[in-house]
Image (tube, rainbow, N blue to C red; front, side, top):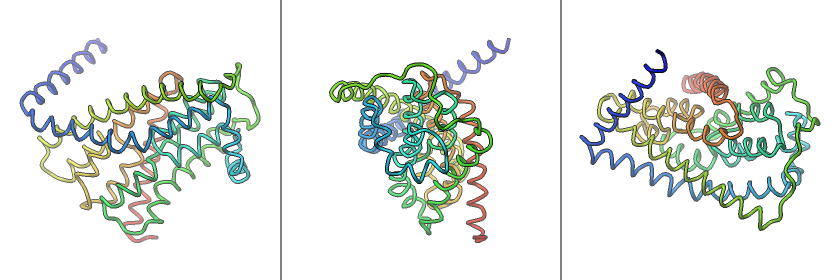
Length: 305
């Protein structure tokens, strides 16, 4: 009975969205093109090279060499192996969805355990600093770069440290994962495999961006209040919500960023599905980070610090 009800609701939703697209073709085209432009102009040039380079390093077993300079600083804090430290670094520097992508790849190639991958997903799959500094901050016109960076990246970092010493305190820094790790590949083989895998991944991400940007037609048509419409758009696709809110509610936009919207959730699922990592657990951690971030920005807006 429950399954039939779910199927009926899904069918009704698809029918309703199809009707909206047919009734408002110009608006539908606008939102779909917006998603396509964001993917083509922003995601491909900023994310695709990192996906290829990271894939090469993982396939050639170079992650340990890459992290060597920062290991003296990161290992005492997290006490995890080199591959996990690599995923943390890439997740914070390259941004979403590289944290999920790298964690899943390392897990699939038996370089980390599924438990370690769940730990990484909990805090290192965040909005990238390039996107945050070049798009979000100019759009919301918020002042004080350092407090904003502290909220965007300091809170997830502290959250990860807290998790490592509580929920994930069972992780052993030097324990090798069960099963044989994939052998090191040649550069040309690694390049070829990385390009193909990255093309597949970036294409799927583009499809999600177009679809969830199209869904922004619903709040645009039926919700007149700018703040409510912006929040709902942000929960669907974060970029569309920020563009709608602009500088009218900067701390609301900042509070929505850790969650990332349903588009980011769907994109993350596409990255972690083959590794059989839990999307439910990932969402719970994202909701916890969103709540902490909202409290931080509330105190920041009130001038408490």
